[in-house]
Structures are given as C-alpha cells and as structure tokens.
Amino acid sequence: MRRIPLILMLGPQASGKSSFIKMNDLQNYTISADEIRIRLNGINSNNGHPQINFVGQTEKIVWQIFNQILQTRLQNGLPTIVDNTNLGGHGFNPINDILKRVPNNYQVYVIDCFKPLLDANDPLSEESLTHALKILDQRNRDREYSVNMDIIQRFVDYYAHFEIPNKVKVISSADLQKVQDLIDLILNFNR
Image 1 (spheres, one colour):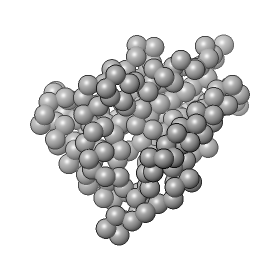
Image 2: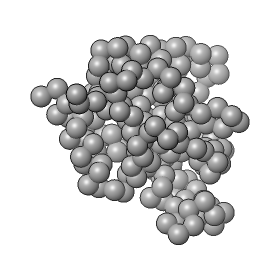
Image 3: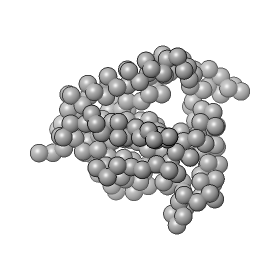
C-alpha cells in the first residue's frame, strides 16, 4: 500500500517555504497558520511594507482552525503540506505534536528550507547562522508580507537547537531530485 505524503516545511520565516510551495504550484495541498492569521487579522504596514498582523488574542483561534483543517485532511486521506516554521523551542516540538495525530497510512517528510543557507562544513557555527540571518533579513524585506526580525532571530535560535524526530524523512530543499520526486508523489497521488 502506498503511503500518503504529509510534508512539513521547516525553517525560519523568509527561508523560502511559501516560495517553494508557490513555485511548485502546491497551494491546493497546503495549510498555513499565516494564511489563517491574514484571514482573521488582516495585514498592517511596517514602514510602508505589508506585514502579517499578529494578534495575540486570536492565536488560540488560529491554531484551532489550523488543527481542524489538518485533522480533516488526515481523516480524508489527502496529501498535505504544512507551511509553518515547524520549529519550536523551550521543550516544545511542533513536529512531535503533529506526529501524534498522523494515521499509519501516512509517510511524514520534512523539507528543510534553511539548511541550504548554512555553511555545509559547519552549519550551526555562529558565523554560519549570522550569515544566514543576513540573507533572511534581506529576503524578509523583499517578500510580500514581512515579519519582525526579532521573530526570525528567535526561530534561527530554535533551528540551532531543534531535533527532528527519527520517524520523519528529511530532505533539503536544495536536493532537487528528491524534492522533485516528492512533488511528483503529491501531484500524482490520486491518479
């Protein structure tokens, strides 16, 4: 029996997760907390640049909606992509939280969009992380909706200390053949 793909995008904001999804025409398979935030809270302006309006009072609702959509897609056996950072800190691992709900007929993958920005020889060195943060800062200014850089810094720190569970197959977004094989699996799953 073929297992249904569930893809968890991984990386700080501006690492290319949403761009990857758009470039590969995967929006119809994707759920995103940021998209829910935009629908609930709208956007605001930060120095003339559109920014996702993060409202603490609605975060519980954002995650209720997100979890309901994810649960429904899993129950319906649909290939799904989760376009969130999927990083956590302070003892919280969002991937483990998702894995608790995934039926056995799914195979969970992580596409790591941050790894290609790091030094291959010493990815978690201070120099490598600082260089990657500069790239994220520029990308953040150039993207459709920016976020505050202190948030991106926090998620870079989470990445440096984050552990991906063993059950998950990890693919770098720079591994073009494996990524293409996974995209083809999603696009052709029910054909």
